[in-house]
Length: 172
Image 1 (cartoon, rainbow, N blue to C red):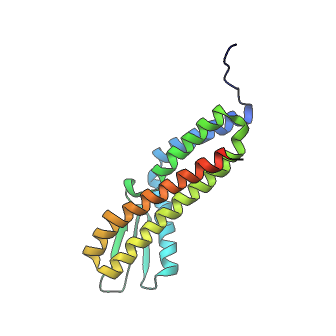
Image 2: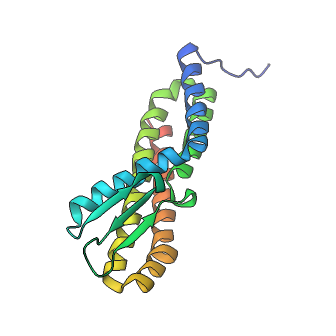
Image 3: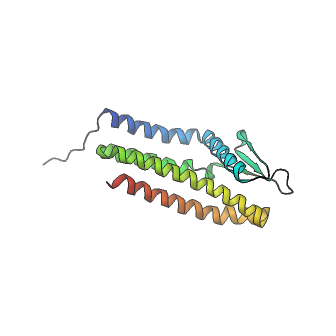
């Protein structure tokens, strides 16, 4: 008995290619993604922070505490973006659809949920950093927010998003 790999129909192939292209696009256009992500941070901070917020998109930087004694700018660097947590999800999703086309819909729903979770977690990381800077001051707050709490939030949030992705994609 010969083992055969199931073939996907045309739509499934298009979806697989689209996911791979999207992953490549995130890598190549991560600067534009970071700009959008920091703009979102600026919107969220603008709603929550009445101390003055400004976004400088071409620097991928959000400034907060404007008008206070301790304004600070946070720059979204390549290692701080959620893009590089989304890329593996897209590639794994593409592989899952290529291998098991009957789960395409579940994989796409799982990708949407996991991607949203990763973006929300990254926004929470930025907000927690801002909160610690306000509470503990620039030096101590930034240190603890960036090196400890930010890492914990990112790791736990990324792990939760991955678990949710697998669970949603593989369960009926």
